[in-house]
Length: 532
Image 1 (cartoon, rainbow, N blue to C red):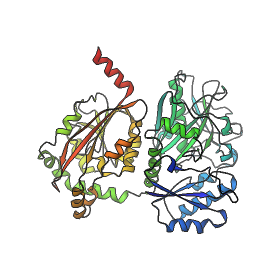
Image 2: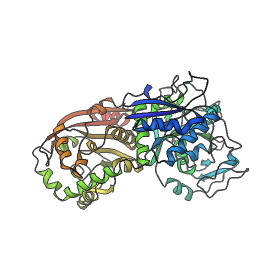
Image 3: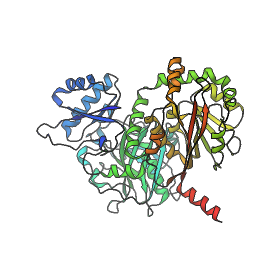
Image 4: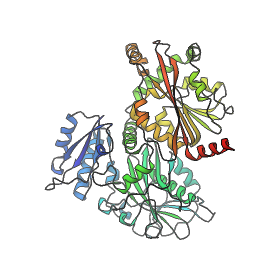
């Protein structure tokens, strides 16, 4: 993709370089800068639009004058319904305001000088008396950014996913009293990342939007209590809806652990120093250490999340759904007639899938009914309600959620295993990266994906069929899989190329590479069991 980075220009400082520079971290896309001055915002935006970029990324860093420029740019794009990566105008308008001047968040709790809060929940850490208290969150300005050393590479990456509706459930359980926790907020320079700053119990957690959901990343350390780590992440994730941060690609949540064990949210920074053009920031170190796929995947998750927000792929998804609907009644018979088609399924079946299983693009359930698991222990996702209905009838699936993998997966809970066969070739590589990063946060034990090698001759025939069947063109993802950065504590346990399937419509043979990833702790336990 060609992506335009719109940056506000400091007059008289041509060497100013404290801006996001994704090109330092990924060669997957082409990034070009366009400088925007406050006195000619619309004219310079129109110049950038005339260049017909695939996407626009609004990036500023600096004093209030630049925040004003950023606000003008955001409002222009919003008014013209042009997709962009960056802060929405409603968030930009909050920046710099004192806590009592900020609009009320989505809550029934009024903000008062004695107790400025969003919500209070009862969420045990290690004892029943310990609780989380989410308070109103002042948005810090860019000048309050911390200068911190890079996060060490020790420890296990830890994730907390958050889906729509979680906050209402938490609010329903609310009942713990919240004291005077805010007291005017705390500057970002006083907060460390994933560690206690000066022993005062303050932490910063990076929250990243993943489609309709968010994830919070925090390096788990040997000296940090696991329950505290999980509670910090869960509290950070709740701020997405409570503090109305929808539309922000990422932000930092600052949390203080009270003397009684309660967690108090004391501030939000909507401009974490990611993709820094300078020396590595602590936020970039956190992504490098914790986020599945690293910076390249982070950029692509921002692209996909932006596209989802503007419905950029909706027409394609409708066409793909329609194509499979017309094929659904004949699908099982067509596949069964293909010689050798079960080779890939048999290869999947040699792995351990005990526990819960999520099947991405499950279709009529061809893979699920063959896996060596208890009947009804699998949950599926499929874009076609007609295919899903057939899959449900046979009883191998506990449930099949209808929708695209990209939209439904982020809203799902965690599973022991995540599998996918003959489905991922329908999405471009940027969306595969998004799915991989999300899957590594949803799987406890293993991920097993079949990646198809789609012949160009197949795509040529499919294109000639016209709509809706032309939506069934495939993408080759071997290169994307080879370059994907596997998260810490995961390993590639198997990579085998086998015959996959023969297209009933074109007659082309498709070979499939099966990738099996296993979590380190699970693999160590399996190795120990075999030795014993």
